[in-house]
Image 1: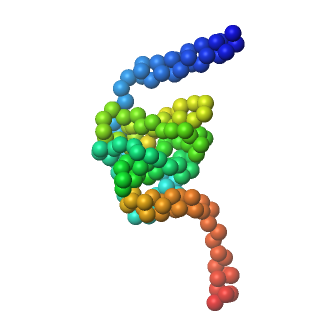
Image 2: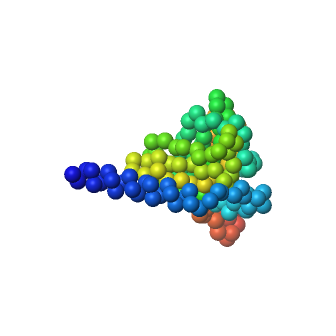
Image 3: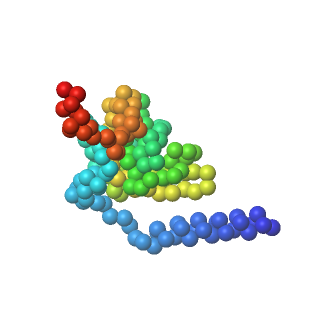
Length: 167
C-alpha cells in the first residue's frame, strides 16, 4: 500500500511540474544582444581560447556526450562534429547522469532558448544552454576539456620583489 501511495505522489508531482511550464506560455527567442550578454556572463574557465561562441547549430543530432564538470559537456553530433555546451547553472547530476535529452522544436539548437534535461537517478532537471562552441574533432574536444578541467581560478601571482631577486 505504501508503494502505491509513493507512486501516486510521484506521479502527481510530475504532472504538477509539467503543467507549470505549459501555463507559462511559449518561450521567446533571445535577441542577438542577449546571446552576447550570456556569453560575456560566462565564468572565464568556459571561455576557451580559440573558440567562437555559436548562437545556433543546425542539423543537430546527438550521438553521444561526455560531461566535463557540473556545468559543461561535450556533445557528439556525428562522426567528427562536437560541441562544447555550457549550461545556465551547475547540475549536481551531470557527472553521473544516465542520459541527457535536448529539448528543442526543430533540428536547430539555439543558445538561450533550447534546454538540456539531465536525467539522473532520481530527477530530470532542465538547464538552458548559456553558451555553445563548435570544436575541431576529437583533438578540439580533448583540448577544451583539458582547459576547463585544469583552469586555475585563483592563480598565484608571483611577488614582483621575489622575481627581481631571482634575476
